[in-house]
Amino acid sequence: MKSRVFFRADGNSKIGLGHVIRTCALAHMLRHDFDCFFLIQAPLDTLRKEILLSGAQVIELPPQTDYLADARHCAAFFTDKDIMVLDGYNFSSDYQCVVKTSGAKLVCIDDIHQYHFYADAVINHAGGITPADYSAAPDTDFYLGPAYALLREPFLHAARNRALASRQNQLLISMGGADPNNDTLSVLSKALKSETIDDFYVVIGGAYKYLEELEAFIGGQNKSIYLRKNLTAIDMCNLMRQCGVAVCPPSSTAFEYLSVGGQLYLHMIADNQRDIGKYFLESGLAFDFDRFGQIGGRQASDALSLQQAIFDGQSDSRLIQIFKTL
Image 1: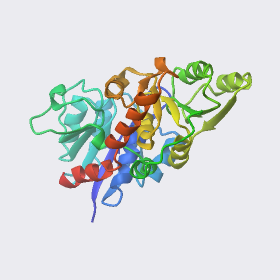
Image 2: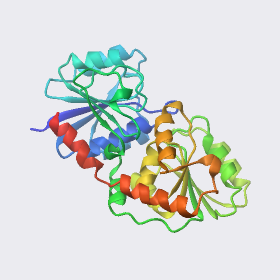
Image 3: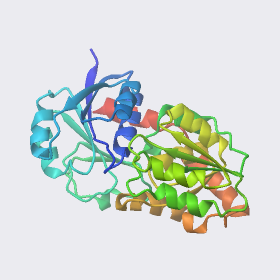
Image 4: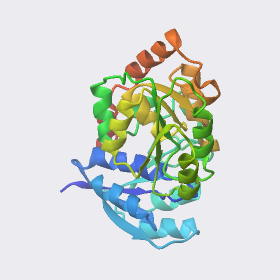
C-alpha cells in the first residue's frame, strides 16, 4: 500500500494560480510512489482539471477565512503515516502547529520566509536563499534553489532535451493565470514599440478578468498579436519553444521558460516575487523588462548557457527523494 501525500493550496483571481500549479507539478512527480490528494477551497474548473491531470484526487473544502478552522478540518484526514504539503501565505506558524498535532509529516513550499516554520522540510526553489534566512524548528530540513524547481513534466523534458528557439522575432507575454492588475496590457503596450519583434503571443489564464479590455486593445493594433487562453502544459511548452524572447513575472512561468531556454525579461507583479526576481537578475539568467530590446551579443548567449547549466531537468528526482526519506 502506498503512503499518502495531501496537498493544500488555493488559487483565484486575487491570489493567482501559481501555488496550485506548482503544487500540481509536485503531485505529478510523486504520483507513482504515493497516493496523492489535493485539498482546496472553491476550485476553478481550470484548476480542478489541472489537479486531476496531475494524478491527484480533489477534496473540496468548505470556503472560509478562519484558517485555524481550516487546519483542524484538514488535520482530521491525516494519520502519522501521511505527509502534508502546504503552499500559500495563509498557512503560517499556527496552521502548521495544528497539522503537526495529527502526527503527519509536514512539508512547506515557501518563497517569502516571513514566519516561523515547524515543518519537517521546507522547499524554496528561489536561488540565493540559505537556511539562515529562515526561522524554523531545529529539526527542519531545507531544500533551496533551482535544483528543486517545481516544474511540470513537459518543462522537465524540455530542460533535459534543450533545443533553443531560433525565432528572436517572436515574443511570448504571460503574466500568470490571474494577473489581478492587468499588467498584460501595459507590458504588451510597451513591447509593441519594439522594432525587432514581428509576432506577439499573449497568454492569459482562467482567472484573468480583463478579457474584453484586452481584446478591444488588440483589435485596435496593426501588429500580429495572437491571444492564447488556458493553455495546457504541453501547449505552453511548445509555445515557449517557438518564442525566443519572453516577458513574464519572476514566478513559476519564469522557471518554466528558463527550463526551455530563451531571452527572458522580468516584470514583477507581486511583492512575493522579489526573492526570485533578485536571483534571476543578479545571476544573469534573465533581464529587467526596463531593458527590453537592449540585450544581445555576449549577455544573451551567457544567459542561455547559464540557463542550461542550472535547469538540468532532474529536479523531479531530487524532490521524489525528499518524500521517500520522509
